[in-house]
Length: 205
Image (cartoon, rainbow, N blue to C red; front, side, top):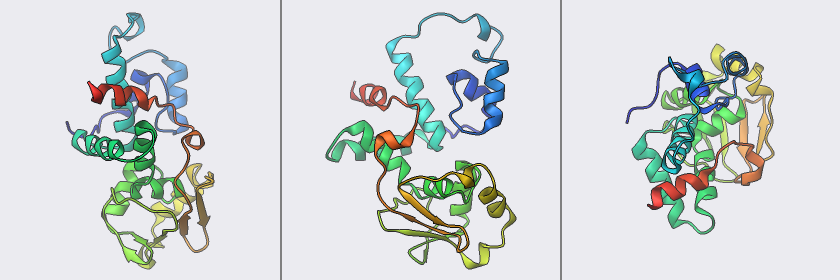
């Protein structure tokens, strides 16, 4: 399945929550708090367990911008790790370089962060990394390349709402345009409205 590139307003209405974090989608949900489509407002049927599990998987995939094969590889890696599979899966997604760039505020969205990484605008421990799925480790330093420090889009992102957020597992030096991934975040620190256990149940069938 291809990565979703359609209207995001429809996605937040389908899930009934703002999975992208942008305040403009909160306004959309206030005006239209029902699924999109001709019969969206009248749909009241209770979804099956399978439909609920599938929707949760789609929610996580779209939030982090992964294809089906990519997402399944993350799940398979999480299964092989010690601990709770669902938590491992979310932590692996949070360790992706594009997600860390977004969390640090160097990009206004995860898709933008993925594009910036693919174009080689970031260094990890002083070396250029242009693979969005690169897994950052505790202690890794993520910095904007010297040639990219004048990019208007990066500065705009750093001044935006996302750029003003802070996370306990990250440190940020705005002046130097660099941050450090201090530790793998705990599940309760993330504040994500996911039920990853439903995804584990889906893949376990």
